[in-house]
Length: 375
Image (cartoon, rainbow, N blue to C red; front, side):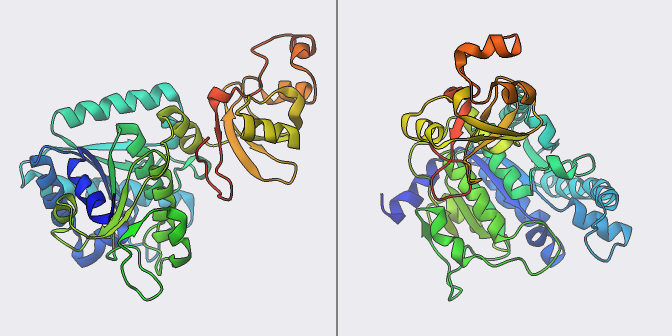
């Protein structure tokens, strides 16, 4: 399809994740009403919309009199707690005026890293959407710890796309889209890596994101087969124009076959607890023959992990090329490293399978990129 046909196809999208960051939301005295009106229009058109919104820390820091974004974790958590109620009150007022109900959903990485709790969250969000409610999602910064954060709400929005089975991710920004070196909007991006060199760092400390974060989130979403659009939060007609197939914002296209939901969860939601260093023969077997990881190919074990935890699989040069779920804990894998599968029970006294990481529990990384991708 050409660009016009691709944009026209967006009219068929039924489940949309809309994300807005602190800078875009807090400009002009707050854009809650503007966001609510655009989302309400899509809900009335029969679409299911989830809103991922930053802003709690920014509002809380203002309420508590902090001149800058706090660096101390306790102060950051205090700002999030003080600001989250203000954020929801503003959204509730804006949506209530339009006859739309909203629901606050606070997620933590720890919660969705458990597959069972992840699926419970999916069912709850599905039910809210069936009821015509707009879930407003934020990370629970008051209880999240640095090691178990999503990173920022751009990454959270990409995860939510997988969680609800979205067919479009819209990221509202303080610019009209991704801009080239001449500050002209890029209309269509076939491969996310094509625009990386245009990215500039954010100029303030209001939020965590910036365009680099949006590009990384787009990478994650497109790998799940979800198109991504970056566009202006200041435009009252942007979302309606986009869903009408008009050339607005920057459209980043998915390519290739999307990762299945479970493998996307392994690649992007779970955080590796350790690393397995493998030899060149094992790397070739995994990458070229889609094999499972056997004990014989493991050179060394790094970190502490339990059965079922996620681990990074790296070469002896330190390059990560796969992630997966292990069938044995770190101590057991250390004892098994370099041995034969037939010796597993003899070495550790139990046998949970011939593989350390089964291929069904593994995601290979795309060559030449620093993110999990297709097999």
